[in-house]
Length: 114
Length: 117
Image (cartoon, rainbow over all chains, first blue to last red; front, side, top):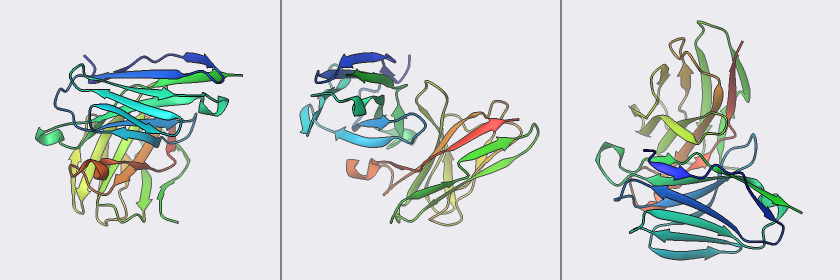
C-alpha cells in the first residue's frame, strides 16, 4: 500500500467550476499536510498547508483535513486555465527515524478547459 | 534574491560514468534534500541532510552519494551503480527538519534533467 495516494487523473473541469483534488495517507500519526502545484518541466511550488482538522481557505484555494478518515483534499474555486498543472499532496511522518520527512503522492493532473 | 540554484539544467551521462549535480542555497536553511521524479510519478527522497557534515539515506539512496561540507551546498553524485538514472532531480531546503510545522515547508530549486546517452 502506498503511503500517500492520489488519483492520477487527468481531472478535467470547465473554466469557472470547482476542482476537487483528493489525497489519502496511511500513517495515522502524520502531522502536517501540504499541497504543491507543479507545471510541466518546472519545480513544485507550495500553495497550501494544513495541520488541524477542518478547512483552511486562502483565496480561491481551500484545503480540507480529516485525520479520522486519513484524507486531505484541495478545492480550487473559479478554476482558471492557468490552474492546469499537476497537484502533489505531501505528508510528514510523525515519528521514528523518518520524523519530519515529507512523503509525496504521485500527483493529480488537472486540466481546466475554456 | 534568496533561493536555491541547481546546475546544470540538463545533464547527459555515459554508461559507467559518475556525474555530479550541484545545489546551492542562500536561504540560510539548515536542512537540504534531494528528490528524484520520474514521468507521471511523485517525488521520491534520495538523501537528506539536517546539518553540516551529516546526512541520511532516503527511500532510494542506492547508486547515489552526497556530501554536506558547507551549509549552502549539497551536491549529489549519480554513480555508475545507478542503472536507471534518467529522471528529473530536484534539490530542496527547509529551515530545519522535524521542527514545528512551519519549518517543514520545502523550497525547491529549478531541477536538473538527467539523461543517459
